[in-house]
Image (cartoon, rainbow, N blue to C red; front, side, top):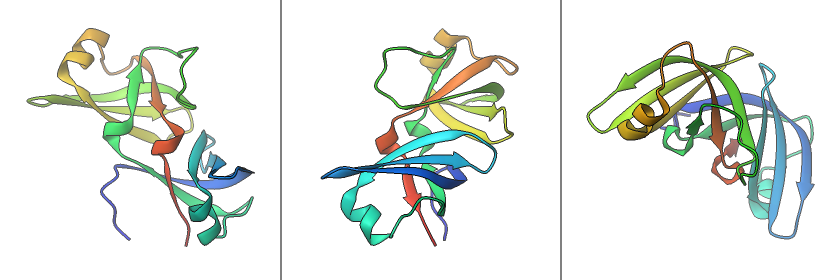
Length: 140
């Protein structure tokens, strides 16, 4: 299977919290990062998701926000700390590659203005912020 989402992480389901409409899936990536995904109950049921299942977590680079530090008081569940490995400026947007402590890479696409205002440079600590509803799950 090929998918256009730049961020593709192998993970194991560590917990499942089932609601009436949605299901919150807690994930531990193969390199130790913790993620939370919220999907519909119907999707979780159709994939027969169980605690301990190996899955892939997918999210688009354009759905990854970048901050220069952890942010309290934000509704986004996923805040992954790392170090900026690469900053590539384009005509309109900047691609930021963040290296997490475990060795996984997160790619973010943000506006050039945002990258400039944040002063993003390689070697700088940063946080990738992803809403749990932006993380899709695939299971073989």
